[in-house]
Length: 302
Image 1 (cartoon, rainbow, N blue to C red):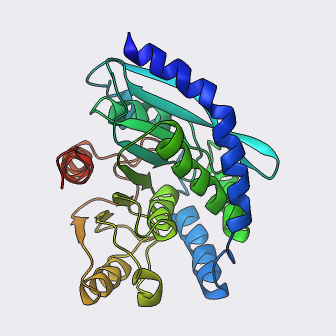
Image 2 (image 1 turned 30 degrees about the vertical axis):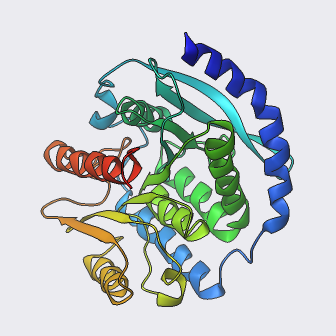
């Protein structure tokens, strides 16, 4: 079958992709201004409060089986700090040519079984999915460990930026995706927005599930990426006030964005890991997400 040939070719091309990705290290950045890092540190504390009684075990979202068969592999997609970075790469089993891609970014627990299961569900909708790892292979199942891992990224964000740059190059060049989106929950939701800021003209869509946002119009000005924001009215970490400020800044800048604040639910209500899952709200958010991705990643979107 063609997809088998394509998959073998993908693995064979990996070495060349990593050489290209390593060269990208020279592009770097300043890792964010001091004020941005201060806000990010505050967000770590806010997430610690929201998840104080939580655990990194798969939620009911991860128990929902993919709607069709998928092929999943653990593959290296980047080299950061002289270390290979492995992600969860998955695509529909019947794929015969490259499909649009979704870069999935994990919660503060890390790239665990719950996130891999959600990546499989997304792939079954007709996408190549790369669930990336910003924690260097580490995961946590309790809040203290998760806070430590998240804080390490916040204190030194440039490796995460480079990780995402190479993930983008992987799905674009090696996987051949004709369109690319980012999607993440919680910690990953903030990084889904950061991915759009790293690729403000290139990324085709970004989905932010209650991640840290900004109303800094200077940072948001370059964005030409359609955004979908999923937030919770009872979230004390990512407050409705901060969401509305973000939304207002996007409106002033005339950016394309859909912002939804779900009533009666709290932070992590749709997460693939944790105890805060709300089935009804999560199902509605899933439909919004799939409709949004279809609108902006489909082949005939132009």
